[in-house]
Amino acid sequence: MAIITLVGEKLARPGVEFIYYGPAEPCKTCKLAGVCVGNLEPGRRYKILRVRSMPSHSCPLHEGKVRVVEVVEPSIEVAIEPRLAIAGSVIKLHLADCSDREKADLFRPEGLFDGDSVKIIEILDDVECNGKTYKVVKVMRKKD
Image (cartoon, rainbow, N blue to C red; front, side):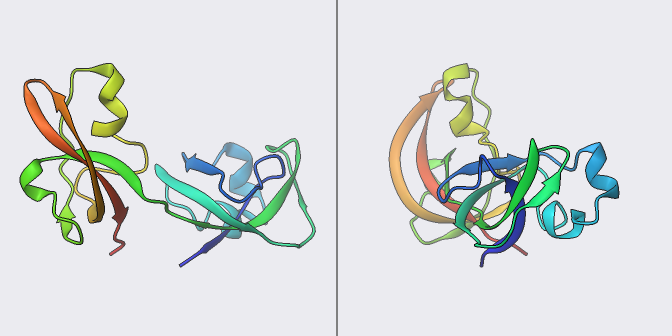
């Protein structure tokens, strides 16, 4: 289900993904904060599905203007224990540690937290780290 929020005019294009890190200081007194930052969860990744054809709104953070958009949490690739990698299953995510900095995004992807419930959409590949083999899977977070 899509979430309505506001993003800067320069980012307001279908397919653009962003991470919401929490409200900035000016957001705390903004009259649009409820629909803008109030609908998003800090630390989560969002993908713009549609830009609504409504007028833009003033914003001190986004070089003047923001647009109304519809966003969803996209699927995210993550490395998991091979025994858990069953397409279609719902698991509680336990993020593994990997000392290889180049693989960090697979083991601790932005937008997912340890303990999240996720549905495995697709099994993609194998990845090795710290002498162990993991499965790279595409997951969607299941909201409580």
